[in-house]
Amino acid sequence: MRHLKAGRKFGRTSAHRKALFRNMVTALIDRERIRTTLAKAKELRGKVEKTITLGKKGTLHARRHALKLVADKSTLKKIFGPLAERYANRPGGYTRVIKLGHRLGDDAPMAFIELVDRDGESSASTPVKEKKKVEGAAKKKSANQKTQDTKKDKKTTKEPVTQKTGEKTDSGKKKIAQATKKKTSGEKEKSTDSKKSTDSKKSTDSKKSTSKDSTKK
Image 1 (cartoon, rainbow, N blue to C red):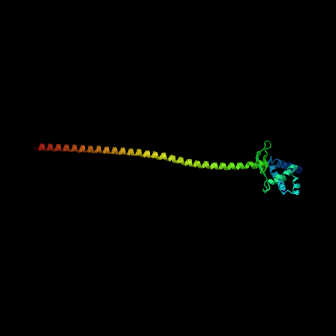
Image 2: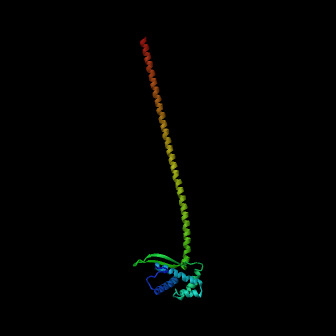
Image 3: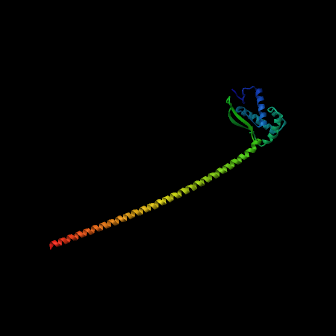
């Protein structure tokens, strides 16, 4: 069982592993961003953060402990000087790991490990936030304008429909008037025909009566 055996060995001896991380810690503190494999970046993160906390303490005892993981005196001055001032109000979490994908050849997962709140990052982060705010406000305005335009378009589309329906009603009224005229003319023709038939009947009846009278005499 592998109890209480934390940490990655990377297929190296203990001396080789100590030298590797000592060089990586000094490189990261000096350049503030390095590219390495994901496993090494995760293992390096804890060691770098411990050295930065030693720099925040600022004592001689802490400086001697930091010399175990730092190779150059210039990087040691940076730890106990500007980095300690930069992270004075931050309770840990001084590094960030960014995955980059897989390396060509052995397909090893690669990553960036960098210090948080760097000099270039702090100045560039505020305009990005402002840009996001401006973009959000612009999106809201455009959405409101689109809703207003859609409402106006709906109103304009409704008005021609009502006009068309009005035109249809006028044409319907005309058709109804024409139908009523035809009905009235048909009724008049029927009435004239009925009058003519009654007149003809009366004339025939009168002729018959006169013929009967003549025969009687």
